[in-house]
Amino acid sequence: TKEKKILTLAGDGIGPEVMEQALHVLDWVQENSDLSFSVEKDLVGGASIDANGVPLTQEVIAKAKAADAVLFGSVGGPKWDKVGFDKRPEVGIIGLRKELGLFANLRSAIVFDSLIGASTVKPEVIQGLDLMIVRESTGGVYFGEPRGIETLPDGTRKGVNTEVYTSVEIERIARVAFELARQRQNRVCSVEKCNVMESGLLWKEVVTELHQKEYSDVELSHMLADNCAMQLVRNPKQFDTILTGNLFGDILSDLAAMLTGSLGMLPSATLGSRQANGVIPALYEPIHGSAPDIAGQGKANPLAQILSLAMMLRYSFDQQAISEKVVHACEAVLNQGLRTPDIMSDGMKLVGTEDMGKAVLVELNK
Ligand code: NAD
Ligand code: K
Ligand code: MN
Image (cartoon, rainbow, N blue to C red; front, side, top):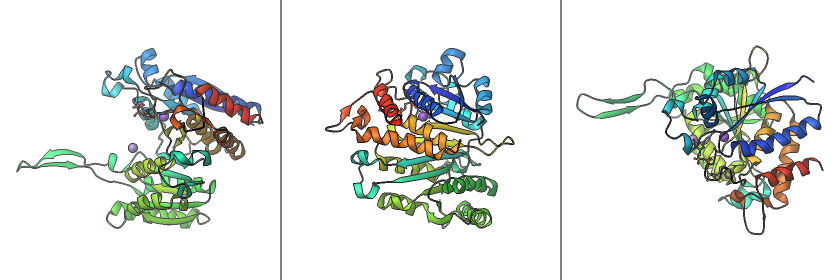
């Protein structure tokens, strides 16, 4: 099979520590399948500021565009707090999203049986949970015009933001959700507030039309965003794939993440539109940041980074079986009672980043 190009950008803080473990897993995948990868490593964020003076170089942008997928770590840290707003490490990830046109943010909430106690929600409500939120992330009220703060003639001040979605933006994100659902349980729940917002009305119309035209094999339902928030807490297992806009997706995906109770366990992906060469630009990263408070101590949880790699295998390279094998290996080490400090509980065995990564490899080799 054709060699796939992967660009890895580990970034700052715990980024390189957890990336190292993910790369061991990637080596294993290469040795134990007919897949072959060329892996290129480069700098982003604070690490790039230190080496190149900017958080994201043109060279890295070009490499990312030429890659089949980007595996990203995390950027940021107190060391770079004093650089200008437009030069801060976080521009590394924001710039990549913009340059690659990554408009679809995918966040999954998976609950592993052995970590059920880490959630504040009753075990029976979340046991076996596996849901995916597809959030539009380059449009909506965070970007709509007009925006700003103005002072009216009578001295009253007014803050304005505008929710804007075009049919083109809605259709392309809906497409991502439908395609994804086909690789999952084939169910999409589209979430808006069409009862009070015209943009929501258009959203529902466009999603319904696209569904009828091209995706009628997928089960589609609609839900108002406030009800969705309630349902996510009441009975999250009713959902497979949730499709929603930027604002509601921001809030609902944080809510869904906390159903699982552990930041160090959660992977994510951001995707763009299929290019002329057939490649869908994609960046995979853990949802957690660079965790400066524990960086350099060898105790970061590498599982979110490894699970981000599993997402890459599934959604960029269509390798469901190997992807599941990696997820199951992570599950198995948790079942053995191995825990990094962030997920530690009574009676479990405390391990560091390195040992957690090694244990995953031992499982994979079984
Ligand atoms: P954070 O996710 O880095 O850390 C929050 C808390 O969770 C910390 O106590 C940290 O120790 C812990 N934690 C996070 N990941 C962990 C892991 N894998 N294992 C064990 N514990 C873990 O969020 P923050 O503290 O708000 O931000 C720190 C820096 O990261 C900031 O500069 C922020 O801008 C950046 N950040 C970057 C990204 C990204 O690269 N996409 C995302 C979020 C935050
Ligand atoms: K990250
Ligand atoms: Mn948010």
